[in-house]
Image (cartoon, rainbow, N blue to C red; front, top):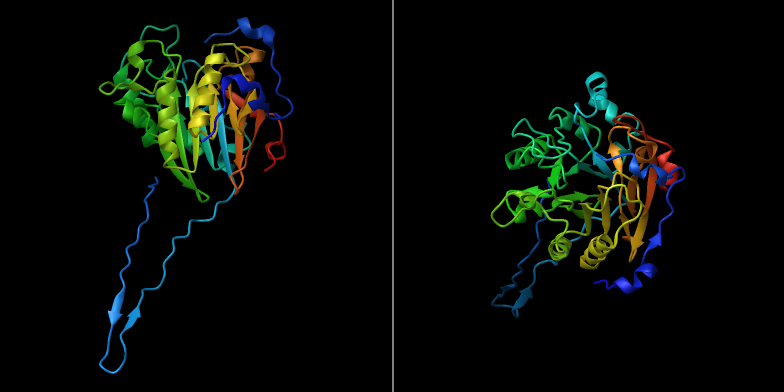
Amino acid sequence: MRASGLAALAGLLLVVSACSGVELDAAARAEEAPPSSLTPLSADTTAARAATTTAPPTTTSPPETTTTAAPKGRLVISGVGDTNLDPGYIPAFQAEGYEYAFSGLQDIFLDDDLTIVNLECAATTLGAPVKELFNFNCDIAALPIAREAGVEVANLANNHGADYGEEALLDTKANVEAAGIEPVGVGRTVAEATRPALFEINGWKIAVIGFGGVVPWPDWVATEDDAGMASGDDIELMARVVADAAQLADLVVVTVHWGVELDLQPRQEDIERANAMVEAGADIIFGHHPHRLQPLELIDGKPVAWSLGNFIWPRLSSAGSKTAIAQAIVAPDGTITACLIPVDIESSGHPVVQVDYRGNCEW
């Protein structure tokens, strides 16, 4: 459908004008580590013939029927990076409540049509910590508050989703779903882990897919027989899943955990993944993991936010606290424009939008 080779990548990647106020501090790189159904329509018609003894036979055909698709309206889709609702990692939640995490956002997530976050934790009471430097255990009670704030989709395929083991990962998926948020990127098998969340909004059919690279342990990856996450390192799988989703939906949105911590630009392997997914039918890509904000660019006219950095996270450094909400605005004719709305994590767990977002993203 679209052919873009790596050799022509420089001509295909066009920088989208980001909103004013988003700056990166490279000197800080060493500071931080850390329901709807899509039902096909069909119709069978038969001709009825009537005859009388006094007139020639006449043929009566049933009235013609047509199926008219709902007119498409404008669509606004938001994506953000690493979202952590662990009160042990962000003690401010114990004093301020989880509403604190969303109170500086000017109701952006309520005003848009679809909001996608990367949930960087296990939201469960099951399991035990695996051997990692950090283990994040988000409070299940925070999930309905995130939904009330406008979050509709959570990617669970990341390097902290299985922090408490396989049973806890699947329990997290169930708890996220019970809160009214669609979980993507994990499942009991690879087929379930790669299954898109499907929406019908403003006349558009939308598929959202989650992938997780940066896998700490090989057994975190879902297989035909084992639970886990949808691999964000298997480029053939990623392209095939996107192509399948493109047969179901008008728009395919990918949320993917990839890259290298503290990098300010995407690496070649992720550029290759993005190209393959766009060629397969991806329309919007939201990336995360590096804990730094990276550029928003276009591949064949499709916006790719390489890394959306931290979002609901401790304020560990100035560079790590400069982040953004990526917004893709789809016009009724299918044209997609995109921008970054600058956000600063002014205090731990409290991201604050820095501009009047409507003016910046041309709402």
